[in-house]
Amino acid sequence: MDPVLTPRGGTCRTRRSGMADRLADLAVAALIDEVTLTPKPGLVDIRSRGAHRDLDWSLMCHSARTLQPTFTALAEAGAGAASSPALRESIGAIGRNGEAAMLAATGGVNTHRGAIWALGLLVTAAAMAPSERAPARVAARAGGLARLPDRHAPGFTGNKGELACRAYGVGGARGQAHAGFPHVVHVALPKLRQSRAVGATEDAARLDALLAVMAELDDTCVLSRGGPAALACAQAGARAVLESGGAGTRAGRAALHALERELIARNVSPGGAADLLAAALFLDRFETEDPIQPKGEPGWNN
Ligand SMILES: CC(C)(COP(=O)(O)OP(=O)(O)OC[C@H]1O[C@@H](n2cnc3c(N)ncnc32)[C@H](O)[C@@H]1O)[C@@H](O)C(=O)NCCC(=O)NCCS
Ligand SMILES: Nc1ncnc2c1ncn2[C@@H]1O[C@H](COP(=O)(O)OP(=O)(O)OP(=O)(O)O)[C@@H](O)[C@H]1O
Image 1 (tube, rainbow, N blue to C red):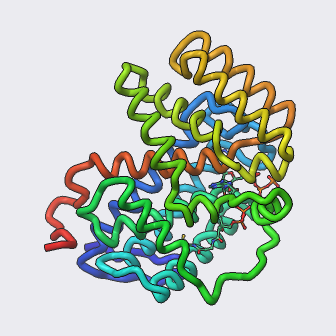
Image 2: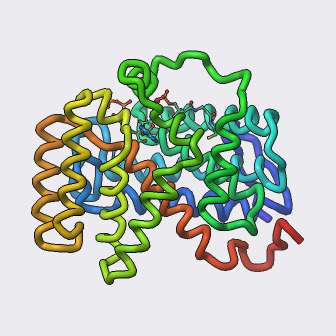
């Protein structure tokens, strides 16, 4: 088995590494699928930087690949483990190292802070019981981890999301995780699967899932740049696309382009919704991919 680089630069060899690598592959693939999905309103995609001056598709893909060892380490920490404050503290340290690795790789640009948090918790939760694949179960375990105390977490980060949570009284990325990712389990995944079931293309189904999350999320990316008026506008615009028939219809496409123009004019980007779409794509594949085990590797549970 190949050695696995950890975020601290060390290596580790365990019989579980094959499974951990596979979970990390799924997480990185979910991030690349999310950023490549086009056309997304206000967000970086393959044809546009959206409302971001410091991001583009190649930087997002580079950042996603840089995170592979972080996700591997998060999966290894979770493998076969029970939920405990010690596990919470250990993945907190890995997550913070992952953020540092991301910033080093991007020259200080925040490409994936929210995604490391959401996907990181889900990767660890998946590794804790890899035979329990139902998205709701994995997300509930991830929520349980998020709610545990971490003595080493900074009390105040001063990050934009945290400031927006205080200013506007919303839960943001932490609240979403503490609640067991309700917008992933009860909004994005059902919409993704419903749109597929009625014959939408995979891209249209993913866009519909993103829009369904945007229509309801207290996205601190939008709030911090544009305040409550921009959030209300993004939510109403996303609802309008879905009510026009969704991203796969002519009327829905027209509404999607109108929403995009509106978000660019307001200089806002639904980054939190994008993170939760990536989380949904991860859970979707984790549930349906069989087996999540490289050839020749023993499983974790046997
Ligand atoms: C909780 C995190 C995201 C810090 O968040 P903070 O409130 O400081 O805001 P910040 O502006 O850095 O990031 C928020 C990001 O979350 C995303 N987001 C915004 N709103 C939402 C929402 N409602 N739901 C989900 N994600 C959202 C956006 O991408 C946004 O950019 C995280 O960086 C953190 O504290 N990590 C600690 C390390 C850890 O414990 N990791 C656990 C294992 S990975
Ligand atoms: N496709 C995407 N395009 C843009 N942002 C995304 C995308 N997917 C996810 N995001 C999320 O959006 C966040 C970036 O948002 P934003 O640029 O508002 O944050 P910031 O860099 O802290 O602030 P600012 O750029 O306003 O100084 C990332 O942390 C990431 O989690």
